[in-house]
Length: 445
Image (tube, rainbow, N blue to C red; front, top):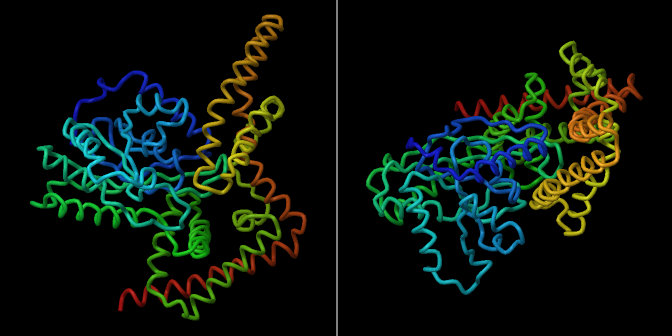
């Protein structure tokens, strides 16, 4: 459904959305947004996403869609100091979960469902995470029926032109600052196209559609080891196609997952491919390098990269200034994560992003005030300019340093080490090709 609603969005909400959009673009090295991305005048649509990165997940969906979206959130978030006003401005809807209120009755959320139904009926959009909670599993967990029941309730209350859309979130390193993320918007399903289904039958059908839709958008594994293996195969094949984007990785990974499902665990080709890929990546770890460095022959040089290298050299003094001046606010988010014992959990990025969102602007503001009060006008202007731009120069170097380190360690033993790694890589790709051919033969049989 397309509606005119941009003018009705609260100015503070628009400002906060922009702030969080900038924060997300700073926290992540790249945010790829693909698929059927909603435009500004989309309305009466329920978005449903997988949930593996706590509060970062709703931020990514809300800031990558052009239309305003109201997220559904667990009620306990309103108890966090300072967060309740932001949730209210975002028009977030609190849901009381049974794990937070074991004695809640089946009717406790009736008022919430009524509010959501009215929101959808009026042309608003809702974001829900049907897995129920953020988690650390390598695959989707069983979906709750809440999203389906919300749409069924809205339809029963007379809402028309209702739509539902799955959104897949993929992270290359979920807990790491300056990692990458992919936001995949799946096909839009019109509730009217589901026929005359009502009530529980409609809710069940929508839940089934969302389960299939989300599984078709993300790369899964029964165990973390299985998922890591799939992602490594996808990385190798993407590098061969010279496409290292997360979009390509995701598409290849889903095809690898589908092919793997056709082959038996005891298939000799599966074992050969698994062993070859595992051995190759173990060797990469020992050599402290990456597949891209091996593929490029250890130099990592390409003519197209010359402008970026010249830029890095030009901003190096500014980057060093930023690295020194912002050492403390850079380290504090890590200390916060350690203090909360949330390292390597689904909350890691939320704590890092939240702490950084407060500390970095405050630190820059204090520095600018001190410069303005203590330095001559010309020097103060130069210092303030450096304070405001040096963090971004430092980020540019931080993004590049891992690749430079990969090349450095590989070149330390360039002769035998590179030849050995290339041999292991070729063996892995050959084993993958054999397993792939077997899967294609089974699929065509």
